[in-house]
Length: 207
Image (cartoon, rainbow, N blue to C red; front, side, top):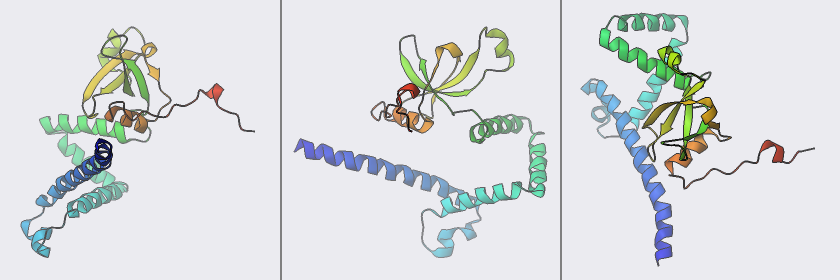
């Protein structure tokens, strides 16, 4: 009896959480429709609420924004808009800080979150998985004697919160593990362990 109950839970719990997360995302993105005048709300035009219209509208706006800003006119408009924001004290600081982070994370040439690392944290002898985010910079470099690496140590099971650390490069181990596999390992609290990879010298050689 207990065996069947646990088997049922293993099937329904992941499914229920997945549906709940997707529903939360859809409801959140549907809130973008509130930016439209009330007369243009889909509920008023169609007479019924259709979930997901906000998601489609948001994705369409993002796509069209990227399409427009890839040409010369769009780039000039973007430069003009950023010039306006640069003259607003508080908005300038927030906007450019967020923009720098997003450019680093989403750029195909960026190195942030491209490597999974094994580090000792919160003390020596205790190991956890972290992600390389870059190199220390600014005046920080004047106070670090050796080569250091900036890393992000996520919390479990919510990896969106965590700790920013600067560790000596000699104290970190680069893992032969994809970022996706490392995230699954963290979110599952170690239950979903990545499959082990053989060292290069131990892998069979194909003729």
